Length: 224
Image 1: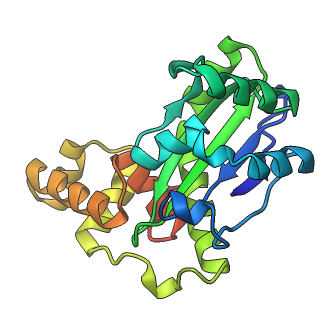
Image 2 (image 1 turned 180 degrees about the horizontal axis):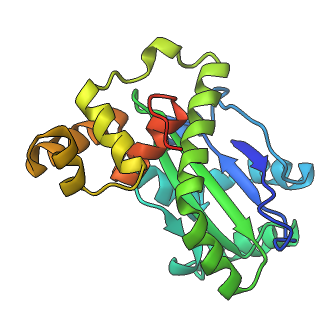
């Protein structure tokens, strides 16, 4: 598990936690191949590991299977042991609101990047909508830096994108639509869509927004 502390403006007084859990599969979570950096209370981390909460944590389980962000409020946490797990987590200061972004690396490694908050629903919804692109960028950046710094990946392992794929991503990052990109590059709309799809595949992400975020994190493109 990798976690970090974020300050997102003075209006957000609750503790925000960015959790990056790196693993190829559930067994790896339980092995020694875990990169760990967290701001959770030590007592909560000790309890989480001692009680094997990896096996019941619904955020971990959903993140292992999916590609898209997991909004905690849209999920059912009311069943049996899971409900008790979240009550314990909140007792240690973990926020009631949360969103988890699954990240997949080029060699199958996976991460979960989670932001939590105790702010009201209205504030959380606005924060989530306004910050999703930045959160995706941060999730991929932390994942890739953690993999390199831990020695689990070499910089040479980064995906190699073609010139056209990079151009399409960079123009998308600057806010251009496919029709505008095709006009600038003198190619068809379908070609732009093909290059973006190829970039998503090479970057092992589900959406073009994630591709832009990951390519930016890897310094393959300059988004700003």
